[in-house]
Image 1 (cartoon, rainbow, N blue to C red):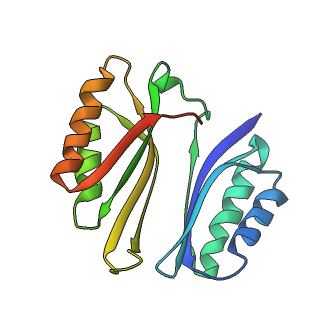
Image 2 (image 1 turned 90 degrees about the horizontal axis):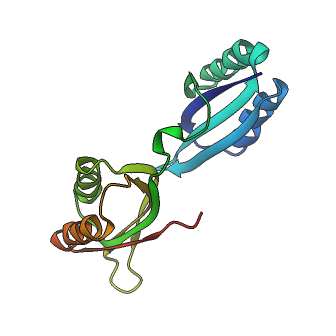
Length: 177
């Protein structure tokens, strides 16, 4: 039997962090089921779902916590199965947001989604400079799951209106995996 745990780790970026952490996971016969990693402002952040034989859970957890001695911030917690039974029947969509960067874009969009009971599965945001003008441009991509009782045309049109109010373009399409 296997046990799942979620690891969050962050610290000053340097070469070899992923190699170091995954070697530790492998030493305890663990497997990385899913992960997200990014370098943000000179810091490295890692989020992993790890599956490990149940009898090795405690020793892996202790090994991961020992990374704190290397100036990483580490948090682990045991989680349930990796299935998505809570969202059975919900409809997945891909959402893309683009426009001039300004404060509040993420909050306004996620607030709209939360009010309608729409769940965010994944979300990535970034800012880059426009090639000619240097204007800061915002970009968000997300996968969302929508309760089946919501009429797609209504929530999509309202979401696009939220984008219009913030002067950003929001496109929603069926998620194809």
